[in-house]
Length: 366
Ligand code: 13P
Ligand code: 13P
Ligand code: MG
Ligand code: MG
Image 1 (cartoon, protein in one colour):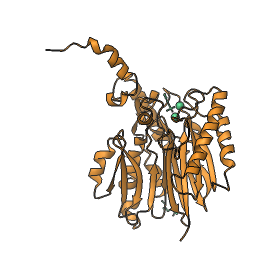
Image 2: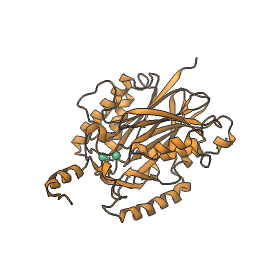
Image 3: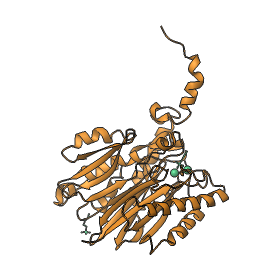
Image 4: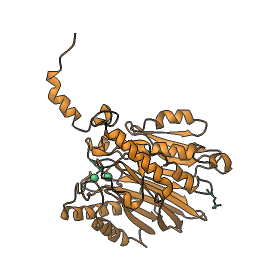
């Protein structure tokens, strides 16, 4: 049997430069140094990058998903980079490291994780999406469009290899339960959940005919781990593409509409998700609007050939223009919903404290 490769993308915000807007080069260089020592041993290959103030570790190996050694390497890298961030007094140094010490797996400890294990095909084009100033539910709409909507993915109609469709595993992050629904036959049921992205998030997508993994997303919600607002989750997502999966351009097409996501300023506002080039992944206006970048790689025996900066293309200019117009429109609402998140999502901010302070001043109406 052919050997399996594991692709692990593990990310954390360990300090912003300046504020929450971007990443200091020293952190990226330090992370490269840490992972460099593991290349050829624990890791086959790696790539370090950033999206906004989030440090992204892209790693290939053969140890499977959730491997303790790989997760410890990522955790130690974040801890080492946090020390650099503290020296430079970067903003929110160590922000996403919510545990005092590593214990087996970084899931539940603050960092975001997306991993998949598969046998590398003759050609294995991989797209890695990384977002800043938003939460994992941000992937619901594009993933639905890519893997279930023939107006986005022509292959669902004309490619016999994906004509049967895909299965979506969705996670209920409040109750920590998962549910798998198949498309197209359970599409309407699926949309009941996907349309409520603050609670239900796509975690994995499989090809229906043979259960082959197609996409996986990080689903860690920091506020649920920490019990208070500590920064937005800023999720990652991996999609395989071509020959039995949506084509590269079909996957990217899923991001051609800058849909509204939760995040932006203080993690408490709705705003458009703007697909940008690597160098434009520096959210500044009202700490946003939320960004997504896409790094494209060809895998070659586990080696990461790339990245290509997939949204660095004029064909996304109009998406960005619309996103800026939406940003203007939403900003004019100031502290009003639907720009500001609904009350149930504000429970980790000042809202409960204001309620507590004013509790005695509420008068019962007859
Ligand atoms: P090529 O003919 O350029 O290989 O493209 C095929 C394809 O899948 C385009 O989406
Ligand atoms: P990050 O989650 O990217 O750190 O942003 C936090 C924030 O409060 C932005 O205004
Ligand atoms: Mg930050
Ligand atoms: Mg961030």
